[in-house]
Length: 171
Ligand SMILES: [Fe+2]
Image (cartoon, rainbow, N blue to C red; front, side, top):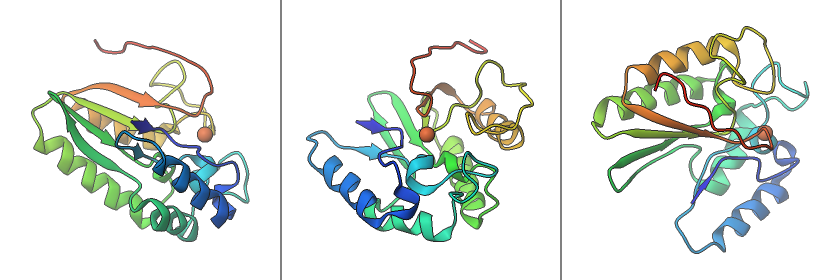
């Protein structure tokens, strides 16, 4: 089971909410692979709420409960990767660490890759220029797409928008 984030409402400022989310996921029978959303570790800047931007303490709270904010595993012939979307554009040192990890993962597999993250890469087009809390912002999006396009990435799964969309891009 892949959980694409926003397990909490006030996770950025609540030990209890994050602990409850971890406990609740622990009740599920299948293996669970979770990445955080903005309501778990805070938004990447500028974000929806200026006082709930991701920082080291908020990230530490998630990591202490869940152990990791990204994952990689094989499923049949697929390689499934998950990343912390809230780091993208954060400027935190963990963003660089995650970029290096993703490069290594993408370079190490010949299997088709599915990537999971909380926020969608874009709303309608990868060329969107608006800075928004609704999707990954233009600069980090461009860096991420550059990575993904060099690798056999076949699908990207995201959450955040509270709606269903199925978009085909570049085949
Ligand atoms: Fe969200």
